Length: 292
Image (tube, rainbow, N blue to C red):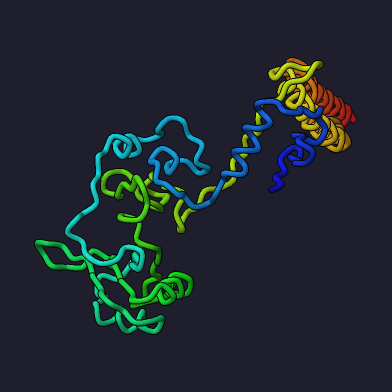
C-alpha cells in the first residue's frame, strides 16, 4: 500500500523511507507506521465508540458526551430477536408510511424472503422508519446489499446495510451514543460504517535525524510556508504600487493629517485673498468712474 503526504512511504528491502528524508531501517516508528497502514480498513471490523467518533479512527479522547456515554454503556443484544443475523439486512430512512407489503414487493426481486420485521412504536403502533429483512440464501442477501442501497421507496432514499447488532463485536446502538452515520446538524457523526467509512489517517510518524530535531524540522517547514506566503504578499504589494502612487498624487494619500490640514488652510486663504483683491479693484474702478 502506498500513501502520499508531504512524502511517500516505500516498502522494500525492509526499509521505511519518506521522500526527501533519510532512510530509517528497523526503527520503531517505521514499523509502527507500516503496521498501522497495513491494518487500516475503511469499515470497522469491531465496534469501538471512541474510534467511531473519529473521522479517521485515531481519537484518543472522546470529543462529545455521547461518545463517553457509549464507552461506558453495557449493551446486550436483544435475545428475543429470532432469525439468522448473517442473512439479515438492516433497512433505514424509510418513509413512515411505508408498509411491510411495500418492502416485500421491492426486496423480493433479489431473492426469496423469509421474514420482514418493520419496527413500530409500542404505544402508537406507528413505524419508526427502519426494518429488518431476512433472506433464505446468502446470494440474495449480498445482491440486495449491493443494489438496494439508496433506492427510492415512497419518495424517500433508503439506506441498506447488514445487521450489526448481533454480528459486530462491541456494538452499541445509537440511542446509547453509538451506531454509525448520523447528521452533520447533530454534531454527533459516527464513522466506520457503510454510510460514513473511515478516512485514511493523515498523521505521519515522528522521524528524527542527525541534523534536525522533531520540533526544529516542523518549524523549518513552517518557515518555508511563511516565506512563500510573504513572497506572494510582496508581489501583490508591488502590483499595487503604481495605482497607489497615482492616488497619492491626486488625493493626497501618504501625507500626514497635519499636512492635509495646512494645505486646506492655504487653499482657503488663497481664495480669500483673491476675493479681497477683486473687491479693491472694483472700488478703484467705481472711484475713477465717479471722478470722470
